Image 1 (cartoon, rainbow, N blue to C red):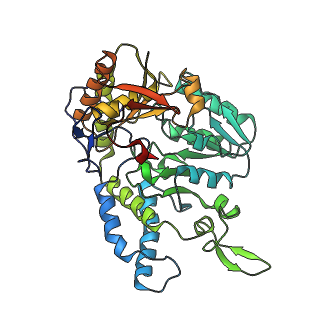
Image 2: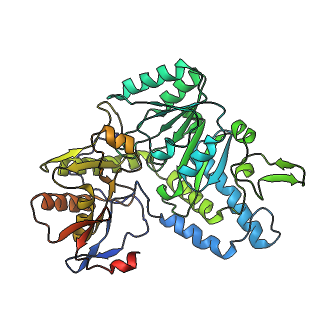
Image 3: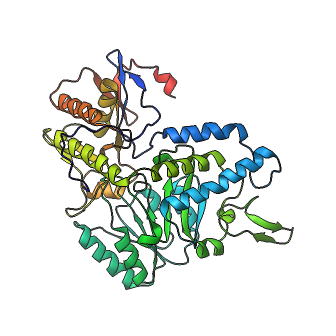
Length: 431
């Protein structure tokens, strides 16, 4: 942990997010305030983000080629969004901002640009494990220090174009030393890509300072759930590669016989772009830039300590960790409980307590397998809108479950756990 706040400190939300006043029905009757512990999957929108979108909607129009007033406003907003993203991540002059749909889209885009082999760890989210052509997978060790040593050995063993690593594990929250890994990659003649989907919402990133060549993250994890992501990186590979999509906007000139492609970012942004998504992402970057990331880390640390302390005494509960020497984690706590399937726990928390968590294998099947949990686990993830009261409700609910105090029956149907009977809404309405 980065902070030393104790588990008994009362922690308030750090920012206003959408859904903070949401009330949800309970299967046993009545309702309660909803507790969102699924920030690692999709974070709610910041108030500044919804305000920015509301202000832009009246002038939303086509970009880059429209002469109308609204089109000029939208174009200006879209291009200025790149500046906001670049400032947020400390991009240098040689790095270009390409808007995409999400992190997965960004990584697949870059995979088509890499002129050689890629080295990845086996702990990666599928988005950073599957796209790379000619990849070599390194099995992470039991310590972070030994894992870095194994990466050094692999990078130096044969020519490598790219090292692709996560900034923070989406399963355990453990943060990797990206500045160290960037130095290692460069000394071995490779570049480095950081999947920052889980890191960007929680820690300050400065590409120029840490030496990272490429960075990818998603708006929907950065409090801007409007369908945009971003790839920030060095221009030369992006300009040399074939366009990610062939179409209007990606070209300078087209004849029947030939096509002259535009340089990045336009080269990889064919078609009408997601102007509102880019504006939302920029608004989130601007809002987060105004926060003290030290305070963000302390906020998460206090809530995580409270979670670990409260859940640590639950019989049969086991926390998932990768390394014994990881110096920092973002606000993620993942666990299993003997005698309960992860989906069963998640269904109970939602149905009887109005608490949303994530269960499953988190698009990281190899990692869950090596941690001895091939059937999945329960993930609790906190964010700017989380508070100590939320944590206490979760801890109390888990203790009640293990003590046999649940009020409803649950059954698995088509692989999913549900309360039986379901009284909160019609099951047909979910189809």
